[in-house]
Length: 144
Image (cartoon, one colour):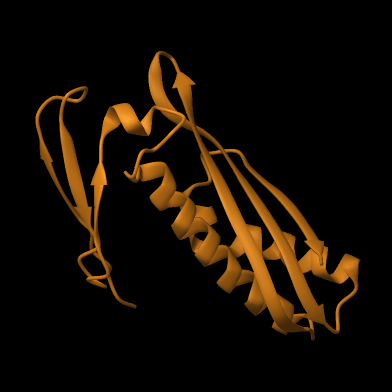
């Protein structure tokens, strides 16, 4: 299996500094990062580690769920997956305090119970979910 790479160039202190994260493997873009904007409600055109984790988790989970649906005898028509990654404080330090996965699916061949079983299996088996196991991950899954 391949290794994927991202690179960040940072200048300055935590509060006054800023950086750019480059998605090196895919070469699809370079994005600004800043701690004050990371900790603010409004991102103001910058990304954050939490947003990048949310992107990784939602895309990985969609792939894992599509696989589980197929294993259960269903056919995925469409999945809409979002991941909300919360940055909070723990012991006075910024900490990822939770992840909320939400999925709505159009699936042939599975009822609501079958879809829920596949959704739970995907949450347990998704490589990103496994990597983030130290964080409380919730799941809200239903058929559209």
